Image (cartoon, rainbow, N blue to C red; front, side, top):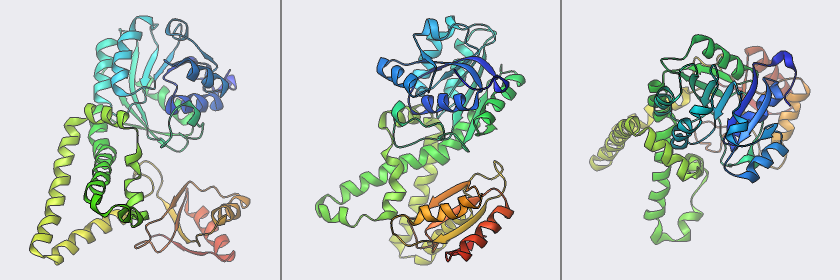
Length: 374
């Protein structure tokens, strides 16, 4: 069973889909003591058993038992399967139950919630912005959602009390809630998440096809910059096709803007207009440099340090030990493998200026080459 009763927000929670996100959420809810009973459903019996063994849920069962008297239901499934599941579980839900999901697109899911969930059931879309290149219950981690932005997309029939209760649940697992409309969510995530994945996949395939005649030489010359730029192309193709399909309206619109940017650069190459190309590159560099580790308005201002580290085993562990022994918490850490602009190798983020100043002094006194990012 879950933790202390003083923290309980829901008596019985049922998570449908015990993969990476569903399992991690179940673990996080257990650590927080936010729900009294955690039940799980999955099509794979082995997955359900492992979820219980790893304490992602307290019990795993079929829909009839797992959904009975549940007052929180989380659909941790791809969008297409979520829509179908809403139809299947609707007759099994008690009045007053809160139904949410964790999908990467929201408009289609929220419409399905409004269509299929009976009166008295409280629907609200959800999207924890966290993930991993790994998948499945074996990769689940209670810390996966900590410090993540957790987006909420109420429907037209979602009560304000439901929104506030979900905010409390999200805060209990140390994530940060942000409320958007379903359409706003899909437009923004189409630009900041879905388009980059599409572009990364296209870039990898361009290298594959254009470099076929060079054989292994092209692989030898594929450096860290290319790997960092295209890392997200390693995501699950079936999951991403599901995302592309459910958000194709906004994704096509954003892709047209991206094509226009490529055309502008191609024209510079055609005309030999390197001054124009330099302007576009400076524009991109300056905007990229202005991006914080976290989105503006979601968190306090980023208080960052840049540290130059040698590429030797154990060096990062030594740095974090210096800060940890002083009681300093690193809220964000980024390894900068593309070094041309940053002139550093590690970016550290802290919650406040005081913590950054203390960290700066400690690292400087310990002999690190460190400076403040403005």
